[in-house]
Amino acid sequence: NAGVTQTPKFRVLKTGQSMTLLCAQDMNHEYMYWYRQDPGMGLRLIHYSVGEGTTAKGEVPDGYNVSRLKKQNFLLGLESAAPSQTSVYFCASSPHAKGYTFGSGTRLTVV
Amino acid sequence: AQSVTQLDSHVSVSEGTPVLLRCNYSSSYSPSLFWYVQHPNKGLQLLLKYTSAATLVKGINGFEAEFKKSETSFHLTKPSAHMSDAAEYFCVVSAPPTGANNLFFGTGTRLTVIP
Image (cartoon, rainbow over all chains, first blue to last red; front, top):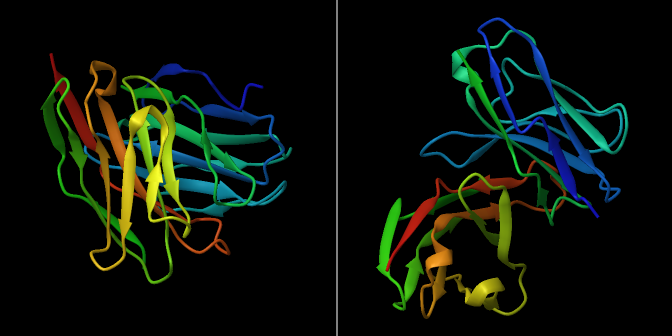
């Protein structure tokens, strides 16, 4: 049972480039989340989804887009990367917004 | 509104001595509270959770936390620190279950264990 899998684990982008981070869960969870983690701060919610085909903005959504075309996958897109988006990104899933399972993170550097 | 304050950004203890990581919370509702641990370059692992059952919660690796409503605290303790406990610890409060966007993280406490 893989749980929550994030790909890639590391990535370096140039300013202005685009990329997509993939989160996949095999637990049939309804809720999925994307967080970013920055030094000295807790995790901050970027976007989340309460089910297939739905998405909603979190605390820090600007510069990101998401899609949930399949229940098991939640994609996070950066259309035009900026240095301020250098961070560690975590995906999480939950069956009922109480018990969360986190992925191991994606370390993104924008130069 | 929900929020979490971790009172220490860094705690340093000697191996074999007790660990205390402090967390105060604010919640308009009866909260669910969690402690997560993050080892270097790893994801977040759930240590323990409080969901309105017993106020003293036992977690993995010998950690415990006590929910004190009168003090709005949920401090994490361990009687004897081990080198493998060195990590970042996050206190988290959960808003009512009707909201999907409902986890609020503290800023973290880095635990250093001195041999």
